[in-house]
Image (cartoon, rainbow, N blue to C red):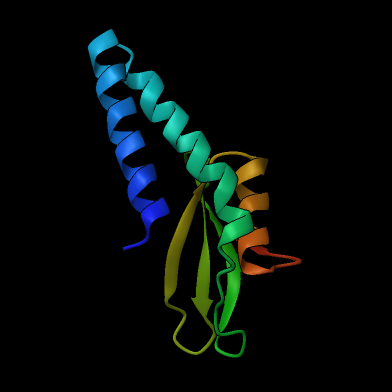
Length: 106
């Protein structure tokens, strides 16, 4: 294991217990979510098979929920990758996968 990973792990555990002790556990999870969301696009470049899959944004006409993922062009099977809550989520998904445009399906 990497020393930097272990150090980060123990700091996160300590931060968790401090938040728990102070009664601010929800703030801890919000901070973690923001931390993971911010660093993930720059550090992780994800790929998909561009010859068999196409990026799709599935939109519900009932409740407006949007899910980004990839649809197999041969079978039509959709693989959910990320729940899209706002434009930042969509931008993050597109940046992670190197996508310039995405089609919407209802």
